[in-house]
Length: 176
Image 1 (cartoon, rainbow, N blue to C red):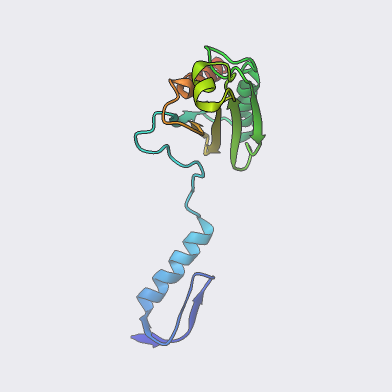
Image 2: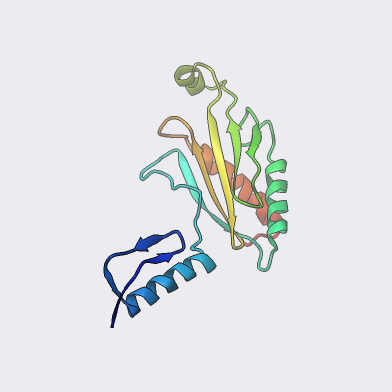
């Protein structure tokens, strides 16, 4: 049996002036209901560009059963323990948390080189290179992306930064 009607489902679409069978109408209502009740998880951190040599990304699983507040506390403690003078010859210009959305979205930490190296002097006019570390917590997993803002190679800087933070989290009992 076909029905003709004006059918509005949420704000998704209006079906009018054509025939829709009951199965199609029911499927549309179910899809709208499921979409409202159980939203598909979306990750706000974009991917590294294919072949990028100045970007690393991945994820860290928090300890089993950890509450989100404990995950946030561990992340903030690890970031705070990262030396402002840098480590392993990277990030000599310090770091700043520029977006603190650890509990509800993507957080961003800005890391700066010292600006003293040959490449900074030659390619960047002696100004520090700036990198961004983005972090997002979803269902007990921390997704990260550490990327340089300019250039096509970072000479391993982003990897060293992530490895240092990973070591701090391991020290807190994270199974990494």
